[in-house]
Image (cartoon, rainbow, N blue to C red):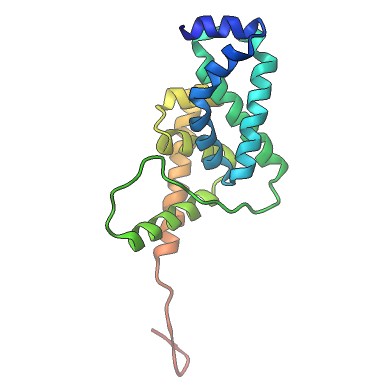
Length: 187
């Protein structure tokens, strides 16, 4: 059964058809939400909110072939809503790889991961969403723009500024601080 037919059945209230549409996308939606919100519990809440909105707003979906992009957009918007509500509270994250890397230097990999995590932590949710969808989930920029409901030029601009901010953050982290020398001199 193709996606267009499943969307049609789901629009008519078929729960099984809706589950058939959503199940293949759940892992990817959860990964995107975790990367944007940086908290597994909040990510689950965002995905749940997006799925509730999808079920409620499904009759208004004009193009059944765009269901996946529409669902990603709902998820990102739910993430941004949660991030706005919790803006004042710091959120810790554990970044888990989507694919198992084959690395031999675990300590170097952890240091790099911490550096990326620190740089992501400094971005606002809108910029973090573009970076997460494009680089961490591998979505092309036009698809990222469609998922976020922004023009492609805006997605490119946000990606550019986010990467610049992340580079500055990484450079600031990696600069060694001068060690004090007995006698008041700085080495």
